Amino acid sequence: MKESIGAKTFLYPCPAVGVATYDADGKANVMTVAWAGVVNGNPASLSISVRKETYTYGNLMAKKAFTVNIPSQKYLEQLDYFGKTSGRDTDKFAETDLTPVRSELVDAPYIKEFPVNIECKVIKAEDLGLHTIFIAEIVDVKVDDDCLDEYHLPLTKKINPIAYIPGDGTYYALGEALLVRKRN
Image 1: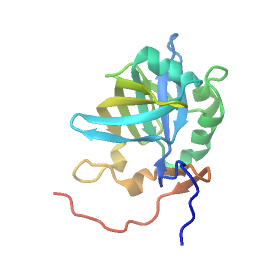
Image 2: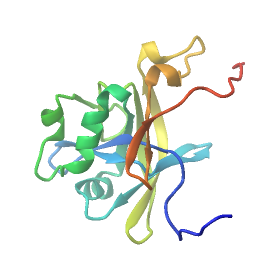
Image 3: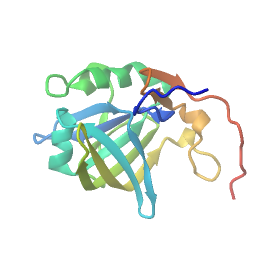
């Protein structure tokens, strides 16, 4: 028998990523986002959902650009810090000893130490109530060389990304591979 628990955000798992932007003065900022996902293949597009009261929200509305930075598990403490501290009051990069790098294709920084960086241009922002969903075209993906396979595609086991479960507020490691398909 199943028990109804109501309308809640229990989609398992969510990627835990750092979304980086510049503010109006060119200061780099980053926040933790777990509500992110692929929304289209051609053009390659993704979405992030951000609350209006965040510092990042204003940066997104002004600059129409951001990066999605996928950390490895060794950066869990920094990623968690990004979500507990406001960029209005703190230089999160200085506090975590991480390095913002100016993107070549969008007006946003990426995080040098994170193995995957996705440069995005906002194409639509839709107010959904508590959150605004930003739909963005992916203009480039950068991946550390040592995290690529022989086909130059990312290897999840080398990246060691972090998953987040909204229902219990816990970060998780991804488990073992269940089915591995050969790439052509």
